[in-house]
Length: 132
Image 1 (tube, one colour):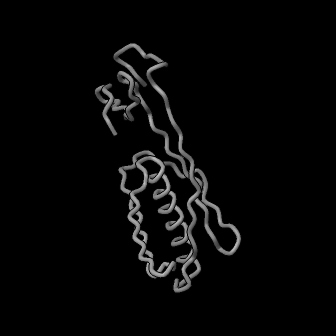
Image 2 (cartoon, rainbow, N blue to C red; image 1 turned 90 degrees about the horizontal axis):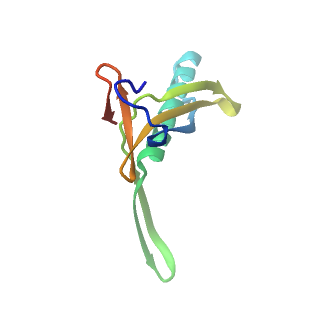
Image 3 (cartoon, rainbow, N blue to C red; image 1 turned 60 degrees about the vertical axis):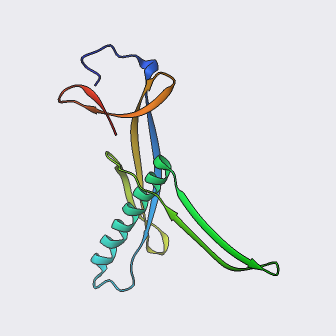
């Protein structure tokens, strides 16, 4: 895996993130098969969103307007963005109330450079570590 150099176990770690994405069958699906496929796709998309939130964090923009001790207006926008490579679907299953669950994981290699742990990907073609 780390060919072309000396492997230092103290300078490399693998962190695994686990999530369970959930998707619901749409009421307006044309067929039962379409509903199942759309629920599976929604569950996987929700899993990817959760992985992005865990890896890169969440930007929250909130605004509240209050008067006379009562909140008159409240809005919250949540945004996350990440490039995920190597996420795995461990299991897709249909649970109660036609809710589909996608158990997923993402493994990220970290390499220590100085005092900081950096995420890296292993490029096997030229055995160099490439940032994610």
